[in-house]
Image: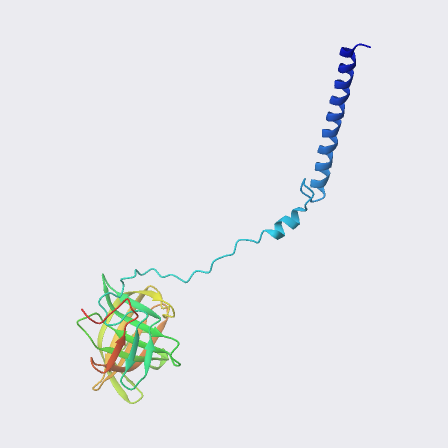
Length: 226
């Protein structure tokens, strides 16, 4: 037999062996995939277990008021308001009441033992009211803020009633809805009472603190200096 013929026979045999090997390899890969394994012999479940799912980041609740919603107020979110008697309130959230601009705000300090609420208006008004929550049913009759009322032996006269838009900023501010009626009440002394009526009603009573009877410790991004 010639060398040429012998070479052709060997080449044909090698090609058949190669094709057969590829067929067996494909069948093996298909079987492994049907049994839940990857072609390289690793189970798909093991690969998934080694790749931890992406963690979901917790985001702080956001509010629809801009960061400068309280610009011009005597105190800001994060500030601490301290009375001369040592009582203090850290302002965690606020209910901003506005027309075209903010006209007043209720600052909430929910971690002060009892809920403390600071009622403030923009400068040049420098005083604030130091308030605590009341049951609205004690002072709200027929759903409408009355022109005058009496609470715990003190008579209050309504100084202002105005419809406003309400927006919450920070954390812990009361949710009263987007449209409210604000009613401010004064007494013969320093006692003050504030009613906010929207989807729900909230009532607050306390005393007015004149400039010099309290201190605002700024959070670092606000100051009392003009």
